[in-house]
Image 1 (cartoon, rainbow, N blue to C red):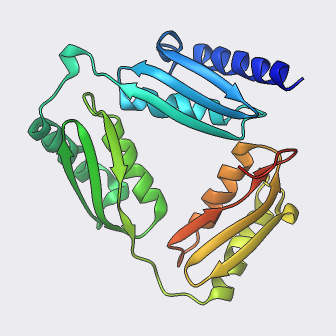
Image 2 (cartoon, helix red, strand yellow; image 1 turned 30 degrees about the vertical axis):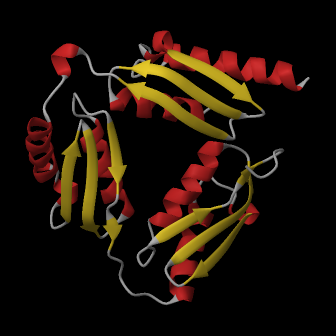
Amino acid sequence: MMMKMDADLQRQVLEELRFDPKVSEVYTGAAVLANEGIVTLSGQVHSYAQKVAAEEAVLRLQGVRRAINDLEVIPRPEEIRSDPELEEALQVVLSWNSSLAGTSVVSTVDNGWVFLGGTVTWDYQREVAEREAGQLAGVRGVTNGIAIQVKTLGIENIRSRIAEALGRSALVDSLRIGLLVSGDEVILRGKVKSWAESLEASRIAWSSPGVRSVDNQLTVEGDGPI
């Protein structure tokens, strides 16, 4: 029975990769393995953006508990850039993004791999910087070491803000999510119906001022810990 479920999930992942125009090309270069809800992607793609989009396509499917992204980025010959060229292009796109105004994001490039550092105020700014870096042709990977410089808020203040936001959301069942705040760290526990719901709960937790880290321990309904 489990083998049949794995085979069905593998088929759904391949169909989703073929369906999504952002990653349809990945379908021909990726191998998919499904094992008890854990999906592993392997093979080669031409850009880091494709690698990220493929993982996002997997995580939005029902029955997926986790995605292991082992896709290797091999840029097309005409898209290969030297490290100084990539660094210069990255500085331009980061400086032109209004979401990063007033931040102190720094970057280095080594053999096509981008390393991001510095500080920002919000987690979404970390995501913006990583996305901008990953969209550049020739980038093979991104390591995001940007730190969040948080505002000082009391634990109850942080907890109440997140709890209220979870309660407002139409995408999560806040009654099934346990919320623990320790200093500037938020821990999420409980069961959710899908990986997408888990990601939304994380996004909400990260959106509160005063949060430096989020430990998402939520599990997908019907599955054990992963």
